Picture (tube, rainbow, N blue to C red):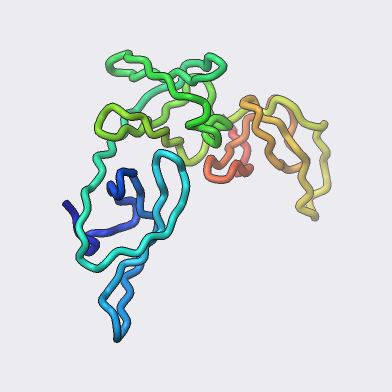
Length: 188
């Protein structure tokens, strides 16, 4: 059991039968009332963000969340298949569980699969940035560097990204997995 005094960003708790991760918290005390802890929580099963207020000192159970490194193999149309590189165990995750993440997943990518109590799959954690191949874009334009002009590019995963005018089909780009934005060219 943990107390509200133990709250910190990223901590996972069990509350009313759901698994939440603390996004933000603030200890609040007014002259006329008892101290409270106002929190912003993300439901790890649904992804919904809610605000909850707890009495200071209230106790709850900490959620047992575990991350296991896995490698993406292929998709079956409705599920993505990952493999544990140590045990060679394969795990299937429904596409509906990883709507955002599927835009950055390519064959051979290493990710962390998150589990609750070692059995229930909650989702996956991507690297901060990934290197993707430009599958389709308008031809490159040279010279227009005074303006921050950009064009659309479709990556190998189907993700649509705004890129600078000099980017061509076949280029490898570094893309941020947080918001799907262009970071730089991949010179490897």
